[in-house]
Length: 99
Image (cartoon, rainbow, N blue to C red; front, side):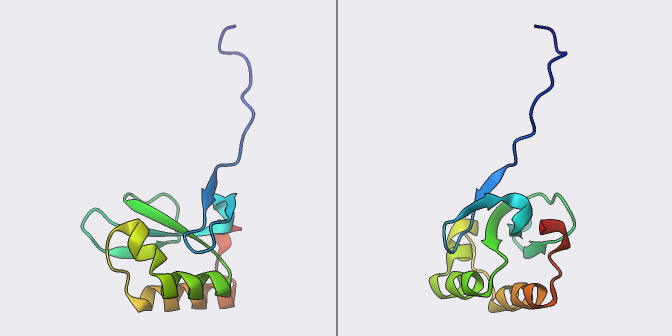
């Protein structure tokens, strides 16, 4: 069996840090702890750093803020401004990269 067989593309799934639902990562919002320690919302493709995923739903964003889910996954405090920015993105439908 040489390298001629095609591989089937299997969507990579990730788990929402708030509700625990597994979804294709294209349907989730990625928040990243950068190597320098900063926290950013990943909106432009691959970014280095530790990532956490959230469903693009208001209830998941509220739950993540209430439970400090992102802080726990990223192992660094996540400012409330990040949650507010994610909420605004979802309200405006700016989740183009993520479906």
